[in-house]
Image (cartoon, rainbow, N blue to C red; front, side, top):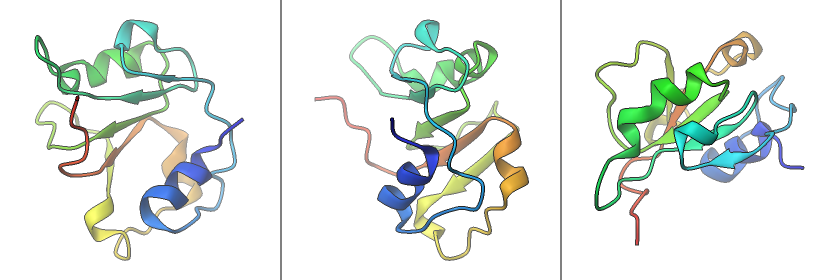
Length: 108
C-alpha cells in the first residue's frame, strides 16, 4: 500500500515526518472519495475536478493533488514549485490538504 510519504517523495524528493500513513484509495471522482483517500483533480471535457475538491474532503479524502489555485479552499496547500521552502510538519497532516503540482494534470 502506498503512503503519503511516497507521494511527497515522488513529487518533491523529500519525506515528511508523520507521512507514513497509507492512502486508502486514489480517486478522480469526488463522489467516490472515502476516508483517507487521495483525490486527483483532473480537468476533463465536461467539468473540472478542481470544482469538487471540497466535496472530496467532505467525503473523507485526506489530500488532493491540484494544478491551479483554488479560490474557495482555505486549507493548507503544499506547492511543489517551492518544495525547498515548504516546511511540512507532522501536524500539517492532521487535516485535509492539497498538493499543488502546476501544469501537470492534463487529461489526455
